[in-house]
Length: 212
Image 1 (tube, rainbow, N blue to C red):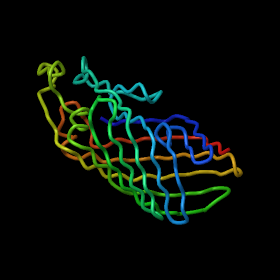
Image 2 (cartoon, rainbow, N blue to C red):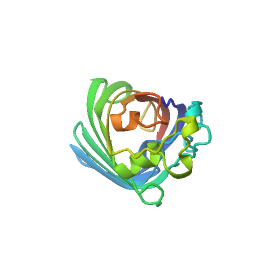
Image 3 (tube, helix red, strand yellow):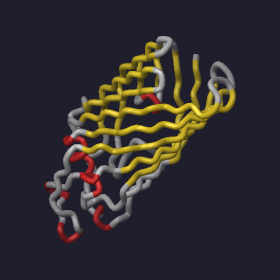
């Protein structure tokens, strides 16, 4: 399974409030010279047949014929940044997966620091709790169908490695366009799932940001 996403999104920043997919759903962010802290509500959906991201390409593999995807979660989101180090944590509050995820990223500034063209790279890891991994990649109950290669499977927690490249162009104090490409390498507990046919997922995002 390789997930590929390429779509435009719009974000808005109103004072300390940040609204849009870049921030989950909405975050209240407080900034300091070397750090920032954010709390908010997010929507997390890494599932096959997601309804959250338009244009998401679900796998056509026969193993997925009749498979019922777990779907997305409404989450409580907390994000902390110190200089180039960012920690993002999400906990399901919708009772869907009951899963927790944590992502640690280190930012590498390659070009630009303000108006005009900016180029950055990020490397890090994405940890997913056992509940969340089983929600996405486990096979149980009505989803078990040995005739289609879907045997019972309960994965453990997962630690995925990722790298991303982010290109942005800041027009002025209000408008900016941002694009990012992310490559994420799956933990073996995910690749061993009978509904997974690849070792990674890739995503391309384009967002337009307006600051008030």
